[in-house]
Length: 132
Image 1 (tube, rainbow, N blue to C red):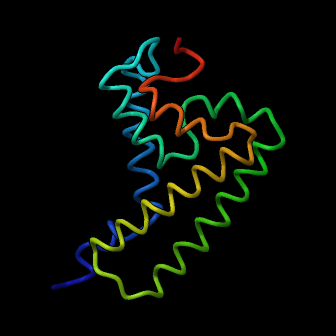
Image 2 (cartoon, rainbow, N blue to C red):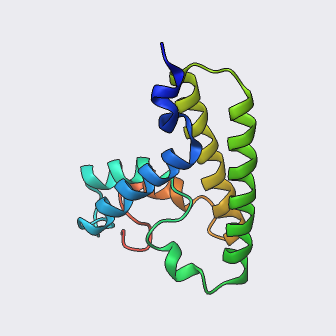
């Protein structure tokens, strides 16, 4: 099998852009809502892999948000280089990319002072600031 054929799917940057794009599209499709919904749970799950979502744009007024962005970029570059050195199958590489994004999302939430908001959105099926 030609490994270069699927090179784009092996990049952590690709998975970050893909999950962010789908998350933003869902966000513009009435998520976050006032009550939990199936769409909210789907968006919440994708949000676990998206360190910077719709609400993050507001949070960039904070110095911690800018610091988290610097940390995020450095760790993404480091993770991508580290994964490129490994000889992983495509499936394992995709799972590792998603695991890296999950860890980075949690880390970015902690740095910004919005600890575990991504997890709260996932479990509630709606944004905590809009939910009951």
